[in-house]
Image (cartoon, rainbow, N blue to C red; front, side, top):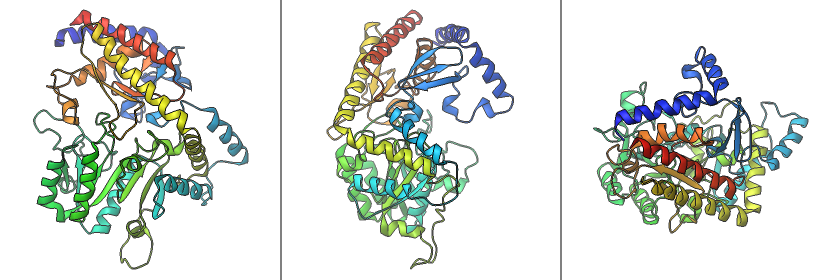
Length: 466
C-alpha cells in the first residue's frame, strides 16, 4: 500500500470513527487541556483519540457513545478471567465492607500470596517482595543483581520490554540505521545507557559472544521466556537452558521477566515448564487480580541484600511504596491465583484453543482477500498452547523468530498494524493493542467468530486501497 493510498484509507477510517464516537472526542479534547497528550499511558492514547469507557464486563467494553467492543487488551493482559469477574468482585465486596482503604500497616494476606507463589514455582528457598508495577519490579531486580555481584553492566534482549526503568530503556524500539542499539528515551544519564548491553533473542551463539567478551563485568542477564511487547515469541528450550549454564559459568545472575508470562500458560511461571530456575524473577499482571501488584522473587542468598544489617555493609533500599502489598490487592491476587489453580485443567486448554482459533482464523480471513497476515503467539515444545495473538503484515517471506523480524519496516509493515489496523478494527467493534492481545476465559467461540468476521471486513477494505 503506497503512502497516498494509506493516507486516503486513514482519512476514511478517521471520518467513520469520529461519527461513531463524538462523546469520546469531547472528553479527549477536555483532557488535552490539562494532561500530557490527554492521558497517562501512551498505549491508551491512539490516533486520532481513544474511546472513553462507560463500563466493562467479561470480554466486552462499552464506550460513552454506546458502542460495544470485544476487547483483547484486557487490562494490559491482567484480566485472564475477563473484565470484573464475579469471583473477584464478590470477595472484594466483603473486603470493602470491612474497610479496604490504605492503613499503612503490614497485613497477613501478603504472606499467604507470597507462600502461594513460591509453592507454585516449586522453590521453597525463594524470598518475595511485593511492589506495585512491572517497571518497579524489574528496576529493583536489576539493583539487587548489581549489588549482589558488585558489577555494573546489564545484559538484555534487543526488542525486549521490561518497563520504563532507566536501566532498561534501551534496545526496545527498532531503528532502521541503529537497529536496537540505542537509548529509547531522553533523560537517561549517558553513562547509564552505555552500561546496558544487548544480545539477540533466541541466539545462543550471540549470548556466548557477549559473555565471553564482558561476562566478568555483567551483573545480570534479564530475559522474558515468552516475549510480550517484543512480539509474542516463546524462547526455544535450548536457549534458556544454555542461558542458565552460561550465566552460572560467568557468575552472572539470570533474571526471568515473567510479568506477562507468569500464570498465563499454567498455574505457575514458565520457568517451571522449562525446568530452568533463574536467580531472580519478576511477576505482575495476573498475580494482582486486576490490581497494582508486582513482585520480585529470588534466591534467599541474593534477596538478603535487601535486609538491614547482617554480613553485608551496604544493602539495596527496596523499601516499598505507599500501596505496596495493599491488603485489597493481595486479597484479589489470592482469589485469582487460587481460582487458576483449582480450574487449571479447564482454563488453560480452553484458552489455548481460543488463541489458536484466533490466530488461524485471522490469517485465513486476510488470505481470502489476497492479503498476507501472519500471527505470532503460538506455543512451542514447552509452552502448551497460548491465548495470545499478535498480527503482522509481512513484506518478505522470512520467518518470524526475533523482534528484529517484527519491527524492521523492511520486513514487516509496523505502521499498518499499529495505526491503520487498530482503527479499522475499532470501527468493526473489536479492540486490540499491537495488532492483537489475549483471549480471556470470558471470551467464547461467538466472540472469536465476531473477531474473525471483523478482520475479514477490514481485509476487504484494505484490498480496495492496495
